[in-house]
Length: 565
Image 1 (cartoon, rainbow, N blue to C red):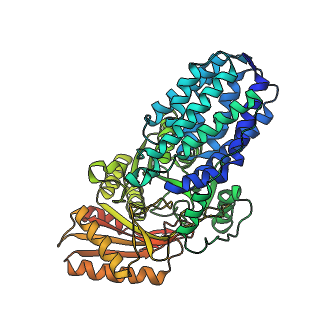
Image 2 (cartoon, one colour):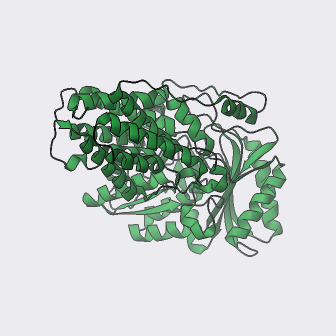
Image 3 (cartoon, one colour):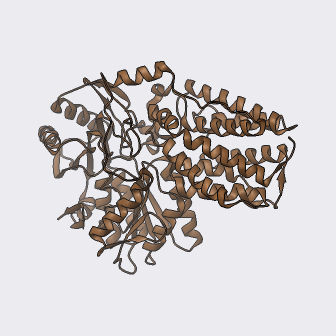
Protein backbone atom coordinates (compact mmCIF):
# COMPACT_ATOMS: atom_id res chain seq x y z
CA UNK A 1 0.00 0.00 0.00
CA UNK A 2 1.67 3.19 -1.20
CA UNK A 3 -1.21 5.68 -1.12
CA UNK A 4 -3.91 6.32 1.49
CA UNK A 5 -7.08 8.18 0.63
CA UNK A 6 -8.87 10.54 3.01
CA UNK A 7 -11.51 7.91 3.64
CA UNK A 8 -8.91 5.25 4.44
CA UNK A 9 -7.12 7.70 6.74
CA UNK A 10 -10.40 8.53 8.50
CA UNK A 11 -11.11 4.85 9.09
CA UNK A 12 -7.58 4.24 10.37
CA UNK A 13 -7.86 7.11 12.83
CA UNK A 14 -11.27 5.83 13.94
CA UNK A 15 -9.76 2.40 14.56
CA UNK A 16 -6.95 3.98 16.59
CA UNK A 17 -9.51 5.87 18.67
CA UNK A 18 -11.41 2.64 19.32
CA UNK A 19 -8.20 0.89 20.40
CA UNK A 20 -7.51 3.56 23.02
CA UNK A 21 -11.13 3.70 24.22
CA UNK A 22 -11.36 -0.02 24.90
CA UNK A 23 -7.94 -0.04 26.56
CA UNK A 24 -8.87 2.70 29.03
CA UNK A 25 -8.88 0.28 32.03
CA UNK A 26 -5.42 -1.00 31.09
CA UNK A 27 -4.03 2.54 30.70
CA UNK A 28 -5.60 3.50 34.01
CA UNK A 29 -3.87 0.61 35.79
CA UNK A 30 -0.52 1.46 34.17
CA UNK A 31 -0.84 5.12 35.21
CA UNK A 32 -1.94 4.22 38.75
CA UNK A 33 1.40 2.54 39.43
CA UNK A 34 3.32 5.84 39.56
CA UNK A 35 0.77 8.53 38.71
CA UNK A 36 -2.75 9.55 39.66
CA UNK A 37 -4.60 7.02 37.51
CA UNK A 38 -6.32 9.53 35.22
CA UNK A 39 -4.38 8.93 31.98
CA UNK A 40 -6.70 6.22 30.68
CA UNK A 41 -9.79 8.31 31.43
CA UNK A 42 -8.28 11.36 29.74
CA UNK A 43 -7.28 9.39 26.66
CA UNK A 44 -10.72 7.79 26.50
CA UNK A 45 -12.38 11.22 26.70
CA UNK A 46 -10.08 12.63 24.03
CA UNK A 47 -10.49 9.73 21.65
CA UNK A 48 -14.25 9.70 22.17
CA UNK A 49 -14.35 13.34 21.07
CA UNK A 50 -12.00 12.54 18.17
CA UNK A 51 -14.27 9.68 17.14
CA UNK A 52 -17.31 11.96 17.14
CA UNK A 53 -15.46 14.41 14.91
CA UNK A 54 -14.24 11.70 12.54
CA UNK A 55 -17.69 10.14 12.22
CA UNK A 56 -19.06 13.50 11.09
CA UNK A 57 -16.10 14.05 8.75
CA UNK A 58 -17.14 11.38 6.25
CA UNK A 59 -16.60 12.81 2.78
CA UNK A 60 -13.71 15.07 3.85
CA UNK A 61 -11.31 15.50 0.92
CA UNK A 62 -8.35 17.06 2.80
CA UNK A 63 -6.32 14.57 4.80
CA UNK A 64 -4.68 17.29 6.87
CA UNK A 65 -8.10 18.68 7.86
CA UNK A 66 -8.80 15.30 9.48
CA UNK A 67 -5.67 15.59 11.57
CA UNK A 68 -6.30 19.22 12.55
CA UNK A 69 -9.96 18.63 13.44
CA UNK A 70 -9.15 15.50 15.44
CA UNK A 71 -6.50 17.38 17.39
CA UNK A 72 -8.84 20.25 18.24
CA UNK A 73 -11.54 17.86 19.45
CA UNK A 74 -9.06 15.97 21.62
CA UNK A 75 -7.61 19.06 23.26
CA UNK A 76 -10.97 20.43 24.34
CA UNK A 77 -12.21 17.07 25.66
CA UNK A 78 -9.10 15.95 27.54
CA UNK A 79 -7.41 18.78 29.36
CA UNK A 80 -4.36 17.86 31.41
CA UNK A 81 -0.87 17.46 30.02
CA UNK A 82 -2.00 14.52 27.90
CA UNK A 83 -4.64 16.64 26.20
CA UNK A 84 -2.13 19.21 25.07
CA UNK A 85 0.54 16.66 24.14
CA UNK A 86 -1.53 14.06 22.28
CA UNK A 87 -3.54 16.70 20.43
CA UNK A 88 -0.20 18.20 19.39
CA UNK A 89 0.91 14.76 18.14
CA UNK A 90 -1.98 14.65 15.70
CA UNK A 91 -1.96 18.36 14.87
CA UNK A 92 1.71 18.62 13.90
CA UNK A 93 1.79 21.32 11.23
CA UNK A 94 -1.42 20.06 9.60
CA UNK A 95 -3.27 23.37 9.78
CA UNK A 96 -0.47 25.09 7.84
CA UNK A 97 -0.35 22.63 4.95
CA UNK A 98 -1.96 22.81 1.54
CA UNK A 99 -4.95 20.47 1.18
CA UNK A 100 -4.13 16.95 0.05
CA UNK A 101 -6.62 14.25 -0.98
CA UNK A 102 -4.32 11.31 -0.30
CA UNK A 103 -1.11 10.67 1.58
CA UNK A 104 2.00 8.67 0.83
CA UNK A 105 3.98 6.84 3.53
CA UNK A 106 6.52 9.69 3.38
CA UNK A 107 3.74 12.25 3.92
CA UNK A 108 2.43 10.45 7.00
CA UNK A 109 5.90 9.78 8.40
CA UNK A 110 6.66 13.48 8.04
CA UNK A 111 3.37 14.36 9.77
CA UNK A 112 4.44 12.21 12.72
CA UNK A 113 7.88 13.80 12.75
CA UNK A 114 6.36 17.27 12.85
CA UNK A 115 4.10 16.14 15.69
CA UNK A 116 7.16 14.95 17.63
CA UNK A 117 8.97 18.23 16.99
CA UNK A 118 5.98 20.25 18.19
CA UNK A 119 5.66 18.12 21.34
CA UNK A 120 9.33 18.57 22.19
CA UNK A 121 9.09 22.32 21.60
CA UNK A 122 6.09 22.37 23.93
CA UNK A 123 7.26 20.14 26.76
CA UNK A 124 11.05 19.89 26.25
CA UNK A 125 11.10 16.14 26.95
CA UNK A 126 13.89 13.98 25.50
CA UNK A 127 14.40 10.25 25.17
CA UNK A 128 15.16 8.85 28.63
CA UNK A 129 12.83 11.22 30.51
CA UNK A 130 10.12 8.55 30.93
CA UNK A 131 7.46 10.17 28.75
CA UNK A 132 5.62 9.36 25.54
CA UNK A 133 8.66 10.73 23.68
CA UNK A 134 10.50 7.52 24.62
CA UNK A 135 8.11 5.60 22.36
CA UNK A 136 7.41 8.31 19.79
CA UNK A 137 10.96 9.41 18.95
CA UNK A 138 12.29 5.96 17.95
CA UNK A 139 9.01 5.24 16.16
CA UNK A 140 9.31 8.39 14.07
CA UNK A 141 12.90 7.58 13.20
CA UNK A 142 11.93 4.05 12.13
CA UNK A 143 8.94 5.23 10.14
CA UNK A 144 10.93 7.77 8.18
CA UNK A 145 13.48 5.06 7.36
CA UNK A 146 10.82 2.70 5.93
CA UNK A 147 8.60 4.73 3.62
CA UNK A 148 8.45 2.17 0.81
CA UNK A 149 4.95 1.16 1.94
CA UNK A 150 2.47 1.82 4.72
CA UNK A 151 2.80 -1.79 5.88
CA UNK A 152 6.58 -1.53 6.23
CA UNK A 153 6.43 1.93 7.77
CA UNK A 154 3.89 1.15 10.49
CA UNK A 155 5.44 -2.24 11.27
CA UNK A 156 8.78 -0.53 11.90
CA UNK A 157 7.16 2.29 13.86
CA UNK A 158 5.14 -0.05 16.08
CA UNK A 159 8.16 -2.23 16.84
CA UNK A 160 10.30 0.79 17.76
CA UNK A 161 7.49 2.30 19.88
CA UNK A 162 7.06 -0.95 21.79
CA UNK A 163 10.78 -1.18 22.49
CA UNK A 164 10.84 2.45 23.61
CA UNK A 165 7.85 1.88 25.87
CA UNK A 166 9.53 -1.11 27.51
CA UNK A 167 12.69 0.92 28.12
CA UNK A 168 10.71 3.46 30.17
CA UNK A 169 10.67 0.85 32.95
CA UNK A 170 14.39 1.52 33.45
CA UNK A 171 14.10 5.31 33.68
CA UNK A 172 13.60 7.81 36.49
CA UNK A 173 10.75 10.19 35.63
CA UNK A 174 11.77 13.73 34.71
CA UNK A 175 8.30 15.08 33.96
CA UNK A 176 4.74 14.71 35.20
CA UNK A 177 3.48 13.62 38.58
CA UNK A 178 5.95 10.74 38.84
CA UNK A 179 8.98 13.02 38.81
CA UNK A 180 9.01 13.29 42.62
CA UNK A 181 9.39 9.52 43.04
CA UNK A 182 13.03 9.21 42.07
CA UNK A 183 14.08 5.58 41.89
CA UNK A 184 10.62 4.41 43.01
CA UNK A 185 9.51 5.00 39.41
CA UNK A 186 11.97 2.41 38.08
CA UNK A 187 10.29 -0.84 37.09
CA UNK A 188 7.08 0.84 35.88
CA UNK A 189 6.33 1.73 32.28
CA UNK A 190 5.13 5.19 31.31
CA UNK A 191 1.43 5.53 30.53
CA UNK A 192 1.94 8.11 27.76
CA UNK A 193 4.45 5.86 26.02
CA UNK A 194 1.93 3.03 26.32
CA UNK A 195 -0.79 5.08 24.59
CA UNK A 196 1.65 6.02 21.84
CA UNK A 197 2.45 2.36 21.22
CA UNK A 198 -1.24 1.38 21.19
CA UNK A 199 -2.01 4.03 18.56
CA UNK A 200 0.80 2.82 16.31
CA UNK A 201 -0.14 -0.82 16.93
CA UNK A 202 -3.65 -0.15 15.65
CA UNK A 203 -2.35 1.76 12.63
CA UNK A 204 -0.09 -1.16 11.78
CA UNK A 205 -2.97 -3.62 12.19
CA UNK A 206 -5.20 -1.47 10.00
CA UNK A 207 -2.88 -1.31 6.99
CA UNK A 208 -1.83 -4.98 7.28
CA UNK A 209 -5.30 -6.35 7.89
CA UNK A 210 -4.28 -8.07 11.13
CA UNK A 211 -5.79 -7.96 14.63
CA UNK A 212 -3.29 -7.95 17.49
CA UNK A 213 -4.81 -8.74 20.93
CA UNK A 214 -4.98 -5.93 23.47
CA UNK A 215 -2.41 -5.99 26.30
CA UNK A 216 -3.32 -7.25 29.77
CA UNK A 217 -1.65 -7.18 33.14
CA UNK A 218 0.36 -10.29 33.82
CA UNK A 219 -0.90 -12.68 36.47
CA UNK A 220 2.06 -11.73 38.65
CA UNK A 221 1.15 -8.03 38.43
CA UNK A 222 -2.46 -8.81 39.35
CA UNK A 223 -1.34 -10.90 42.32
CA UNK A 224 1.13 -8.25 43.50
CA UNK A 225 -1.48 -5.51 43.25
CA UNK A 226 -4.03 -7.48 45.23
CA UNK A 227 -1.44 -8.33 47.87
CA UNK A 228 -0.71 -4.64 48.44
CA UNK A 229 -4.23 -4.13 49.71
CA UNK A 230 -4.24 -7.04 52.12
CA UNK A 231 -6.77 -9.83 51.83
CA UNK A 232 -9.05 -8.01 49.39
CA UNK A 233 -9.28 -4.74 47.50
CA UNK A 234 -12.13 -2.47 48.58
CA UNK A 235 -14.30 -1.11 45.75
CA UNK A 236 -15.82 2.34 46.26
CA UNK A 237 -19.48 3.00 45.55
CA UNK A 238 -20.35 6.43 44.19
CA UNK A 239 -23.66 8.21 43.69
CA UNK A 240 -23.21 9.28 40.07
CA UNK A 241 -24.79 8.85 36.65
CA UNK A 242 -22.49 8.57 33.63
CA UNK A 243 -18.86 8.99 34.82
CA UNK A 244 -18.21 11.17 31.77
CA UNK A 245 -20.79 13.70 32.98
CA UNK A 246 -19.71 14.14 36.62
CA UNK A 247 -18.03 17.54 36.19
CA UNK A 248 -20.85 19.00 34.12
CA UNK A 249 -23.57 17.70 36.45
CA UNK A 250 -21.62 18.81 39.52
CA UNK A 251 -21.57 22.36 38.17
CA UNK A 252 -25.27 22.23 37.40
CA UNK A 253 -26.01 21.13 40.95
CA UNK A 254 -23.86 23.93 42.36
CA UNK A 255 -25.67 26.54 40.28
CA UNK A 256 -29.05 25.13 41.26
CA UNK A 257 -28.11 25.94 44.86
CA UNK A 258 -26.11 29.16 44.38
CA UNK A 259 -27.20 30.49 41.00
CA UNK A 260 -28.18 33.85 42.43
CA UNK A 261 -24.50 34.61 43.02
CA UNK A 262 -22.71 32.60 40.33
CA UNK A 263 -23.23 31.50 36.75
CA UNK A 264 -21.70 29.19 34.18
CA UNK A 265 -19.33 30.36 31.48
CA UNK A 266 -21.09 29.53 28.24
CA UNK A 267 -19.86 26.43 26.42
CA UNK A 268 -17.21 25.31 28.94
CA UNK A 269 -16.86 24.01 32.50
CA UNK A 270 -16.21 27.42 33.98
CA UNK A 271 -17.93 29.21 36.87
CA UNK A 272 -17.95 32.96 37.48
CA UNK A 273 -19.31 35.45 40.00
CA UNK A 274 -22.32 37.36 38.72
CA UNK A 275 -21.04 40.62 40.21
CA UNK A 276 -17.42 41.64 39.60
CA UNK A 277 -16.67 45.37 39.97
CA UNK A 278 -15.37 47.24 36.94
CA UNK A 279 -11.64 47.93 37.18
CA UNK A 280 -11.02 45.03 39.60
CA UNK A 281 -8.05 42.71 39.14
CA UNK A 282 -9.73 39.42 38.28
CA UNK A 283 -8.53 36.38 40.22
CA UNK A 284 -9.00 33.22 38.15
CA UNK A 285 -8.22 29.85 39.68
CA UNK A 286 -8.65 26.35 38.35
CA UNK A 287 -7.50 22.79 38.07
CA UNK A 288 -8.80 19.27 37.97
CA UNK A 289 -12.10 18.39 39.56
CA UNK A 290 -12.16 15.88 42.39
CA UNK A 291 -10.66 18.25 45.00
CA UNK A 292 -13.92 19.85 46.10
CA UNK A 293 -14.61 22.42 47.33
CA UNK A 294 -11.33 23.54 45.69
CA UNK A 295 -11.29 24.90 43.01
CA UNK A 296 -14.70 25.67 41.60
CA UNK A 297 -16.52 26.44 44.84
CA UNK A 298 -14.03 29.03 46.13
CA UNK A 299 -15.69 31.95 44.37
CA UNK A 300 -16.82 34.90 46.46
CA UNK A 301 -16.00 38.12 48.26
CA UNK A 302 -12.23 38.58 48.65
CA UNK A 303 -11.70 35.17 47.04
CA UNK A 304 -11.73 34.06 43.41
CA UNK A 305 -13.80 35.69 40.69
CA UNK A 306 -13.87 32.68 38.38
CA UNK A 307 -12.76 29.05 38.19
CA UNK A 308 -11.87 26.95 35.15
CA UNK A 309 -12.65 23.33 35.95
CA UNK A 310 -11.05 20.32 34.31
CA UNK A 311 -11.99 16.68 34.30
CA UNK A 312 -11.29 14.65 37.44
CA UNK A 313 -7.61 15.18 38.36
CA UNK A 314 -6.90 16.76 34.93
CA UNK A 315 -6.23 20.42 34.26
CA UNK A 316 -8.80 22.38 32.24
CA UNK A 317 -8.05 22.82 28.53
CA UNK A 318 -6.87 26.18 27.11
CA UNK A 319 -10.28 26.99 25.61
CA UNK A 320 -12.00 26.59 28.98
CA UNK A 321 -9.38 28.71 30.74
CA UNK A 322 -9.40 31.42 28.06
CA UNK A 323 -13.18 31.78 27.99
CA UNK A 324 -13.43 31.76 31.77
CA UNK A 325 -10.71 34.39 32.22
CA UNK A 326 -12.10 36.59 29.46
CA UNK A 327 -15.53 36.46 31.08
CA UNK A 328 -14.02 37.55 34.42
CA UNK A 329 -11.88 40.39 33.08
CA UNK A 330 -13.10 43.84 34.00
CA UNK A 331 -10.44 45.83 32.24
CA UNK A 332 -7.69 45.51 34.87
CA UNK A 333 -6.20 42.19 33.83
CA UNK A 334 -6.22 38.68 35.26
CA UNK A 335 -4.17 36.97 37.95
CA UNK A 336 -3.98 33.19 37.48
CA UNK A 337 -3.48 31.11 40.62
CA UNK A 338 -3.17 27.32 40.37
CA UNK A 339 -1.15 24.29 41.42
CA UNK A 340 2.20 23.64 39.79
CA UNK A 341 1.49 20.61 37.58
CA UNK A 342 2.62 19.95 34.02
CA UNK A 343 -0.87 19.94 32.53
CA UNK A 344 -1.94 23.10 34.35
CA UNK A 345 1.26 24.87 33.34
CA UNK A 346 0.88 23.97 29.65
CA UNK A 347 -2.80 24.81 29.43
CA UNK A 348 -2.79 28.00 31.52
CA UNK A 349 0.28 29.28 29.64
CA UNK A 350 -1.51 28.72 26.34
CA UNK A 351 -4.57 30.52 27.70
CA UNK A 352 -2.36 33.43 28.80
CA UNK A 353 -1.07 33.68 25.21
CA UNK A 354 -4.65 33.70 23.97
CA UNK A 355 -5.58 36.47 26.39
CA UNK A 356 -2.64 38.63 25.31
CA UNK A 357 -3.81 38.28 21.72
CA UNK A 358 -7.21 39.54 22.90
CA UNK A 359 -5.62 42.52 24.64
CA UNK A 360 -6.07 41.13 28.18
CA UNK A 361 -2.93 41.20 30.30
CA UNK A 362 -2.35 38.41 32.81
CA UNK A 363 0.14 37.29 35.42
CA UNK A 364 0.58 33.81 36.89
CA UNK A 365 1.40 32.52 40.36
CA UNK A 366 1.98 28.78 40.53
CA UNK A 367 1.58 27.23 43.98
CA UNK A 368 4.47 24.89 44.84
CA UNK A 369 4.13 24.32 48.57
CA UNK A 370 4.73 20.53 48.71
CA UNK A 371 8.25 20.24 50.08
CA UNK A 372 8.33 16.46 49.56
CA UNK A 373 8.02 16.67 45.79
CA UNK A 374 11.40 18.23 44.95
CA UNK A 375 14.49 19.56 46.77
CA UNK A 376 14.93 23.28 47.41
CA UNK A 377 17.30 23.68 44.45
CA UNK A 378 14.42 22.56 42.22
CA UNK A 379 11.71 24.48 44.04
CA UNK A 380 9.87 25.32 40.79
CA UNK A 381 9.35 21.57 40.28
CA UNK A 382 7.39 21.24 43.50
CA UNK A 383 3.68 20.54 43.22
CA UNK A 384 0.88 22.49 44.84
CA UNK A 385 -1.20 20.87 47.56
CA UNK A 386 -3.46 22.15 50.35
CA UNK A 387 -1.47 25.33 50.96
CA UNK A 388 -3.55 26.63 48.06
CA UNK A 389 -6.16 27.60 50.67
CA UNK A 390 -3.84 30.05 52.42
CA UNK A 391 -2.68 31.35 49.05
CA UNK A 392 -6.23 31.96 47.85
CA UNK A 393 -7.14 33.77 51.08
CA UNK A 394 -4.35 36.30 50.58
CA UNK A 395 -4.48 36.55 46.79
CA UNK A 396 -8.23 37.09 46.84
CA UNK A 397 -7.95 40.03 49.21
CA UNK A 398 -5.02 41.49 47.29
CA UNK A 399 -6.87 41.30 43.96
CA UNK A 400 -9.86 43.05 45.54
CA UNK A 401 -7.74 46.08 46.44
CA UNK A 402 -4.62 46.21 44.27
CA UNK A 403 -3.74 46.59 40.59
CA UNK A 404 -2.52 43.45 38.82
CA UNK A 405 1.22 43.90 39.30
CA UNK A 406 0.90 44.63 43.01
CA UNK A 407 -1.51 41.73 43.53
CA UNK A 408 0.96 39.50 41.71
CA UNK A 409 3.77 40.68 44.02
CA UNK A 410 1.77 39.99 47.19
CA UNK A 411 0.60 36.56 45.99
CA UNK A 412 4.15 35.61 44.98
CA UNK A 413 5.44 36.68 48.37
CA UNK A 414 2.83 34.51 50.09
CA UNK A 415 3.73 31.54 47.89
CA UNK A 416 7.41 31.91 48.70
CA UNK A 417 6.67 31.68 52.44
CA UNK A 418 4.42 28.63 52.23
CA UNK A 419 5.37 25.04 53.11
CA UNK A 420 3.26 21.86 53.21
CA UNK A 421 3.72 18.14 53.78
CA UNK A 422 1.23 15.29 54.01
CA UNK A 423 0.59 11.57 54.50
CA UNK A 424 -1.84 9.16 52.87
CA UNK A 425 -3.51 6.12 54.41
CA UNK A 426 -5.90 4.88 51.74
CA UNK A 427 -6.43 5.65 48.06
CA UNK A 428 -9.36 7.27 46.30
CA UNK A 429 -11.33 5.86 43.39
CA UNK A 430 -11.93 7.97 40.29
CA UNK A 431 -15.59 7.98 39.14
CA UNK A 432 -16.15 5.11 36.74
CA UNK A 433 -13.23 3.06 38.04
CA UNK A 434 -13.42 -0.01 40.27
CA UNK A 435 -9.89 0.03 41.63
CA UNK A 436 -8.55 2.69 44.00
CA UNK A 437 -5.59 4.76 42.79
CA UNK A 438 -3.36 2.98 45.27
CA UNK A 439 -3.67 0.38 48.00
CA UNK A 440 -1.73 0.00 51.23
CA UNK A 441 -1.36 -2.75 53.80
CA UNK A 442 -3.10 -1.89 57.11
CA UNK A 443 0.19 -1.17 58.87
CA UNK A 444 1.71 1.25 56.30
CA UNK A 445 1.20 4.79 55.04
CA UNK A 446 2.53 6.95 52.22
CA UNK A 447 4.74 9.83 53.37
CA UNK A 448 4.76 12.95 51.22
CA UNK A 449 2.05 11.99 48.73
CA UNK A 450 0.27 14.44 46.43
CA UNK A 451 -3.37 15.47 46.22
CA UNK A 452 -4.07 13.31 43.17
CA UNK A 453 -3.12 10.08 44.90
CA UNK A 454 0.39 10.10 43.44
CA UNK A 455 2.67 7.88 45.51
CA UNK A 456 4.61 9.60 48.25
CA UNK A 457 8.36 9.77 48.52
CA UNK A 458 8.38 6.63 50.67
CA UNK A 459 6.22 4.13 52.50
CA UNK A 460 6.63 3.96 56.24
CA UNK A 461 5.05 2.12 59.14
CA UNK A 462 1.75 3.50 60.39
CA UNK A 463 2.22 6.04 63.18
CA UNK A 464 0.10 7.66 65.87
CA UNK A 465 -1.35 11.13 65.32
CA UNK A 466 1.30 12.74 67.53
CA UNK A 467 4.13 10.93 65.73
CA UNK A 468 2.80 11.95 62.32
CA UNK A 469 2.55 15.60 63.33
CA UNK A 470 5.98 15.60 64.97
CA UNK A 471 7.59 14.22 61.82
CA UNK A 472 5.75 16.58 59.47
CA UNK A 473 6.44 19.68 61.56
CA UNK A 474 10.10 18.83 62.08
CA UNK A 475 10.59 18.49 58.33
CA UNK A 476 8.67 21.67 57.53
CA UNK A 477 10.58 23.76 60.07
CA UNK A 478 13.93 22.43 58.87
CA UNK A 479 13.04 23.20 55.25
CA UNK A 480 11.47 26.61 55.88
CA UNK A 481 13.85 28.02 58.49
CA UNK A 482 10.85 29.11 60.57
CA UNK A 483 12.05 29.53 64.16
CA UNK A 484 11.24 31.02 67.56
CA UNK A 485 9.80 34.53 67.27
CA UNK A 486 8.41 34.00 63.77
CA UNK A 487 4.68 34.27 63.14
CA UNK A 488 2.76 31.68 61.13
CA UNK A 489 -0.68 30.78 59.88
CA UNK A 490 -1.40 27.07 59.80
CA UNK A 491 -3.80 24.81 57.97
CA UNK A 492 -4.52 21.13 58.65
CA UNK A 493 -6.27 19.64 55.61
CA UNK A 494 -8.13 16.37 55.28
CA UNK A 495 -8.05 14.52 51.98
CA UNK A 496 -11.66 13.39 51.88
CA UNK A 497 -12.48 10.53 54.22
CA UNK A 498 -10.37 11.66 57.17
CA UNK A 499 -12.72 12.72 59.94
CA UNK A 500 -12.78 16.11 61.62
CA UNK A 501 -11.98 14.30 64.87
CA UNK A 502 -8.68 13.05 63.42
CA UNK A 503 -7.82 16.46 62.01
CA UNK A 504 -8.48 18.17 65.34
CA UNK A 505 -6.26 15.64 67.13
CA UNK A 506 -3.51 16.53 64.66
CA UNK A 507 -4.12 20.26 65.19
CA UNK A 508 -3.88 19.79 68.97
CA UNK A 509 -0.35 18.43 68.58
CA UNK A 510 0.57 21.07 66.01
CA UNK A 511 -0.48 23.81 68.44
CA UNK A 512 1.56 22.28 71.28
CA UNK A 513 4.68 21.87 69.14
CA UNK A 514 4.64 25.43 67.81
CA UNK A 515 4.11 26.85 71.30
CA UNK A 516 7.00 24.76 72.65
CA UNK A 517 9.27 26.09 69.91
CA UNK A 518 8.33 29.73 70.54
CA UNK A 519 6.67 30.16 67.15
CA UNK A 520 3.81 32.67 67.22
CA UNK A 521 0.48 31.55 65.79
CA UNK A 522 -1.59 34.20 64.03
CA UNK A 523 -4.34 31.83 62.94
CA UNK A 524 -5.05 28.10 62.75
CA UNK A 525 -7.53 26.50 60.35
CA UNK A 526 -8.70 22.89 60.21
CA UNK A 527 -10.90 21.55 57.42
CA UNK A 528 -11.12 19.36 54.34
CA UNK A 529 -10.97 21.94 51.56
CA UNK A 530 -8.53 20.33 49.11
CA UNK A 531 -9.72 16.76 48.93
CA UNK A 532 -8.97 13.74 46.73
CA UNK A 533 -12.38 12.16 46.40
CA UNK A 534 -12.54 9.81 49.43
CA UNK A 535 -8.81 9.40 50.00
CA UNK A 536 -7.73 9.00 53.62
CA UNK A 537 -4.89 11.20 54.82
CA UNK A 538 -3.99 14.74 55.82
CA UNK A 539 -1.44 17.47 55.36
CA UNK A 540 -0.05 20.35 57.37
CA UNK A 541 0.68 23.76 55.86
CA UNK A 542 2.61 26.62 57.47
CA UNK A 543 2.90 30.11 56.04
CA UNK A 544 5.42 32.51 57.55
CA UNK A 545 3.69 35.87 57.97
CA UNK A 546 4.71 39.50 58.07
CA UNK A 547 2.59 42.64 58.53
CA UNK A 548 1.66 42.91 54.86
CA UNK A 549 0.60 39.28 54.52
CA UNK A 550 -1.35 39.47 57.79
CA UNK A 551 -3.20 42.54 56.51
CA UNK A 552 -4.55 40.67 53.50
CA UNK A 553 -5.06 37.40 55.32
CA UNK A 554 -7.28 39.15 57.88
CA UNK A 555 -9.65 40.59 55.27
CA UNK A 556 -13.08 38.95 55.68
CA UNK A 557 -14.03 36.56 52.89
CA UNK A 558 -17.16 34.67 51.97
CA UNK A 559 -18.00 31.82 49.64
CA UNK A 560 -20.46 28.90 49.83
CA UNK A 561 -17.86 26.59 51.37
CA UNK A 562 -15.23 28.89 52.89
CA UNK A 563 -15.93 31.94 55.03
CA UNK A 564 -13.62 33.73 57.46
CA UNK A 565 -13.81 37.01 59.33
